[in-house]
Length: 252
Ligand code: PEP
Image (cartoon, rainbow, N blue to C red; front, side, top):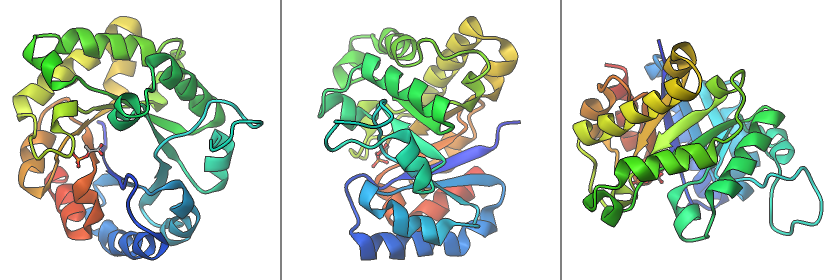
């Protein structure tokens, strides 16, 4: 049985005071929904203060990106060891905003994924098609290319540590949510790719999250799909009531 994971991606929002307030708001009531795993991913500079708040609570800490090298002359980058030192358990990799605004390739995401796993961080590897790719019937091809490229060389003994997030780019921050059937179709395809490359048991243990305008009003229908194991939440994670409302949908 896969426990659902509700992950908040705060993106480039929250100054220190707002991050502390938001983290307190989530932690205060997270225990009421113990059937799900919780995660908050603040901006890098707020990892340390948020880490102090979530320590010892059911809420885990994650970062929104990292670099694959361990240390050295990589100005502006963060290593897996630095994230672990800041209290992170998870790291989001290959988010569509990094792929499409900052030009991150599958090869770059792959290096980061392998480095995160080697260091003991849980990577949340994002995949998802653009609107024109969906409309031209390319969704399955794009998802397969991103799966193959971003998860290349992940050994069988580590694949169950990986979380995959399916985030159709046209649904992120737009208010347009994939229907539960559209999302489930892609999640089932991803599970099938895992089965082909690894085995049935591993494929069944990998959590596949849906992301794209998830809010309390649509969470229940999405999260009741058999292959949707949680949500990666942007906008709604900036309001504790909305974020907690999503978890309520997941635990019913
Ligand atoms: C995201 O940031 O990964 C995301 C899905 O954003 P939103 O929930 O705002 O669409």
